[in-house]
Length: 113
Image 1 (tube, helix red, strand yellow):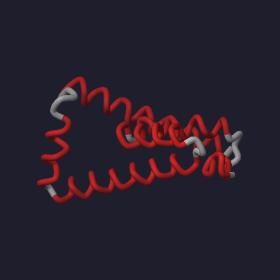
Image 2 (image 1 turned 45 degrees about the vertical axis):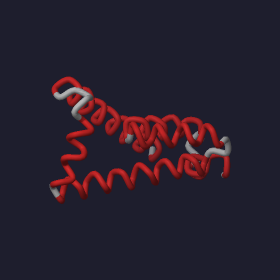
Image 3 (image 1 turned 60 degrees about the vertical axis):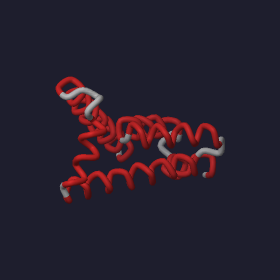
């Protein structure tokens, strides 16, 4: 039951971020995203949010590098996590819940379990 709920949260979170991302591209486009992101640093709360998110993304990337013995695969996963954020990370963790067969230790530690 616990893993099913965890997977449900991953799916709902992924669908939410996918919807928001599609709408952002639809209404604003991709090109202005960098200017908006950098411009947001003029507001302290937005700067706090973006910095918090980047630290979270870097930690997720380091975790992916750690749990994968193959360095090239780890680097690819880390780059995807940093560049795509939760859109990649949630899908990755969802897939891991199946490959780990519900074993949380295997899910967290991967090849190092």
